[in-house]
Image 1 (cartoon, protein in one colour):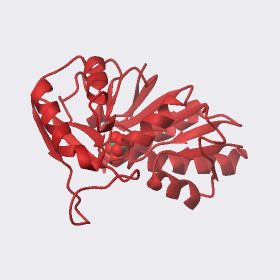
Image 2 (tube, rainbow, N blue to C red):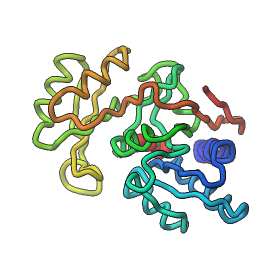
Image 3 (cartoon, rainbow, N blue to C red):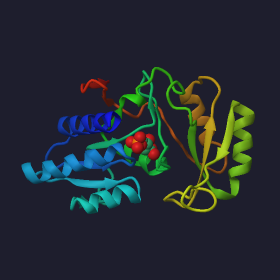
Length: 232
Ligand code: DER
């Protein structure tokens, strides 16, 4: 369908324009990045590219192994050349909401270790302001024992509604790759996302927020008309 085609467009364009021989590549999580790994594997075969891949989740690790790409980690490669990952929403300043797939913590670590972080997304993620397109709120990874007080503190200081993300194919809450819970904070109005990110991060029990501020250098959007729009 159109959104899947758009994801593929963005993914192929980003990989072709940013991945070079001998690169250490951070591989994100979610559905869009699947196309990026397909393209990476194709280029490795066709161009005999020599790259290693650092995953951001069990899902990313499985994708890397499934395609026979060279798997590595931050112990062996603490500095990456490029990280490629999806997003739930991208605003005009390249501030992101991520974590729709519950992988935000390792994603932010890997993005932070990369010289270059490029987002790949379909047109639905292309936004002017956070909250315009994405209505599920900001994901926040928390230590399980603290999810109630953390929820209360966020609602009290920033408004909106905070809910514990419940699993669909498992009874009870979603448990992340790091054995934590996820809160979704449905904010009511725009905020200074840099300040909010820092403030939420400081709440005892918060592991990471899905607000990626001043991290992405570029975003590739696959558009409905088959074009690719790049925001820098
Ligand atoms: O969970 C995540 O952070 C994913 O990267 C998400 O933000 C994008 O997933 P999608 O490519 O399936 O929309």
